[in-house]
Image (tube, rainbow, N blue to C red):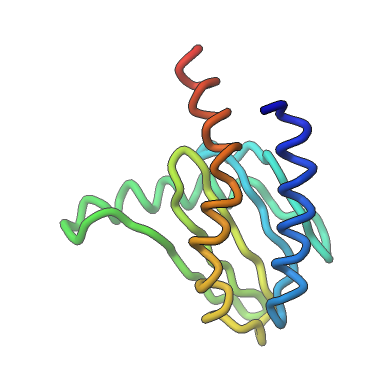
Length: 129
């Protein structure tokens, strides 16, 4: 599937997801190094370096012996981040401080399914290097 078409369809889907979750402000799909692949946001640009930091945290958390880290939720003064590990992708959902965190976490499987074509493209690109 052509990369541009995957991104266009995915942006439309992600926009719909944001509108269905009260308090959600954006979704970022990036690679594990923080390179932004697709982003939709009702606010400012989402910092892609969050994904690189998440990947490092996942690597460390996986060493604790509890199994593979699926998600990490971070609460800030005015934001909530739900980051989903879908190696080699990181899906970040950003919400305001009153966002419905349960709904943000609840869409993880839908988001993984939606980004599967993008994941396949990134996997192909990584094996070519």
